[in-house]
Amino acid sequence: MRWFWIDKFVEFERGKRAVTLKNVSIVEEELDEYLPGFPVFPNSLVIEGMAQTAGLLIGEVSGFEARVVLAKVGKAVFHRHAFPGDQLRYTAVVQDMQKDGAIASLTSHIGLELQAEVEMMFAFLDDRFPSGPLFEPINFLAMIRAFGMYDVAKADGQPIPPPAFYLAAEREADEAYPTGPVNS
Image (spheres, rainbow, N blue to C red):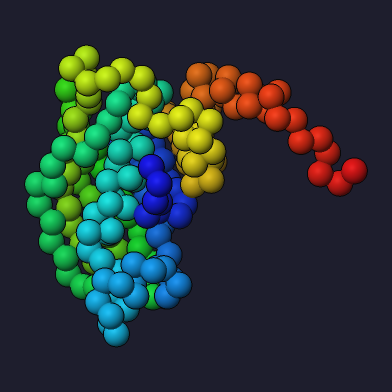
């Protein structure tokens, strides 16, 4: 994942629901280049932010061992544009999860106003595709830590820790590149 279209998780309930925030800023190049002279956040990037939210919600169920990809956008209805200064609140709800994929419904709100409604289908890649993680473990853990996902993640009311595999990769990186005390 090179570009992030979410800024922060504010809710995360394993396999059920996640809520993220995206702050739309005038300094984002995409606003300049999409419709010159009319700084609007592209709807395609709203969909991508929603897909990142739901994809992380769905992938976390397996400890990110299942390789989850967006397979299809079944429905997308936009009620208004997002402009610089707006804060998008994405809510993803898992509707169904099977062994080969999942379906999620998502909404985007700006304040109390409904901005978009989207249905997405995700596939779990099987052995027909190259094996291994989709992302480098240490980079992936750094990304989801930056989003604050594990700060709010819960399962049955209890905090969810990062998967052991990712914590081991983080420890290995820390041992390989020790930084020492910051204020020494």
